[in-house]
Image (cartoon, rainbow, N blue to C red):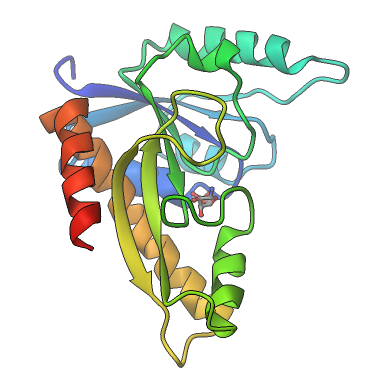
Length: 212
Ligand code: GRF
C-alpha cells in the first residue's frame, strides 16, 4: 500500500462522495487509500461508511467558545497525523481558515455542486434549479477546485462538468443527477491529481472549460 496516495476525507453529512472514493479505491480504479475520515458532526452518516470500510474516523465537533483559529489549528494537527498526500473536502460544511490551509498548501481540494463563479455557499443545487425555472441560466454543473485561501468555493479549477436540466426534472431527479455527476467528477479529479499531478490537472481543466 506504500505506493498509493494517502487521502484524508473531511465530511459533515451523508458521505455519498466519500463512498464513491472508497468504492473506487476498493475496485482498484483509484490508486489511493482513504487513511482517515474526519467529521465535524457526530451524526454524519459518512462515519458509518468509514466504519463499514474499516477506515479510521475522527469526530471533531466545534466546542463552545472555541475560536475558528483554535479549531483549525487542532484540526490541522489531527489531519497531519495521518500524513495525507491530499485532503479532500467532500461535503465538509465548514469554512476553513488560513490557520488550517497554510499547513497543506496546494493539497486541499473541494467539491462544489455548481460551475465556477456560480452559486457559492450552501443550497447551490436548489438555487440553480430555481434559476433555471425562471430562465436565468441554461444549465449548471459541478466542479472540483483547489482551496488555496479562505475564498468560498472559488479556488483554481481542477475539473468541472456541465449538468443539463431537463424539462421533466423535479428538484429531486435533478439533484440525483447532480450527485451522480459529483461522484464521477471527484474520483476522476483525484485520479488525475495522483496520476498526472497538480500542474497538468489544472492545465487540462483550463483547456476543457474553454471548450465547454
Ligand atoms: C455535495 O453535494 C457536496 O458538493 C456539497 O454537499 C454535498 C455532500 O454530499 N458540498 P455527500 O455528503 O457527499 O453525500
